[in-house]
Length: 117
Image 1 (cartoon, one colour):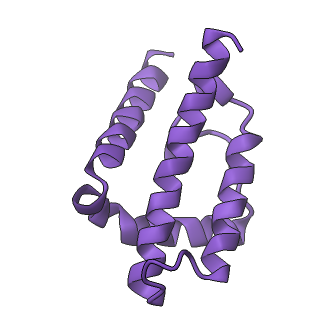
Image 2: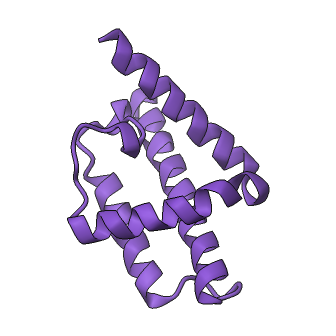
C-alpha cells in the first residue's frame, strides 16, 4: 500500500472514530446504554455512517461532512446523524478532546480550501 493510500485510509479511519465516539456518547447519555455499546438503532446509524464513509467519492480529499457539496445520506439518516451531532458535539471536548480538536482542524482546513477555489 502506497503512502497516499495509507493517508487516505488514516483520514477515513479518523472520521469513523469521531462519528463512533459521537454516536456512542449520544447513545449512552440519551438511551441509557452505559458501557454496553450502542443500542440497535444507534448501531444501525453507525453502520450506515461507516458505509457512507467507505463509499465517499472524495476519499483522500474528503471535506468535513458538513461542508461537503454531495449529500450522500438519505434524508431520515441525515436527520438522525444531525441530531446526534447537535447533542454530542458540545460534549465531545470534555470526553474526547483529541478527536474534537482534530475534527475542528479538518473543518477549518476544508473551509479554507473551498474559499481558495
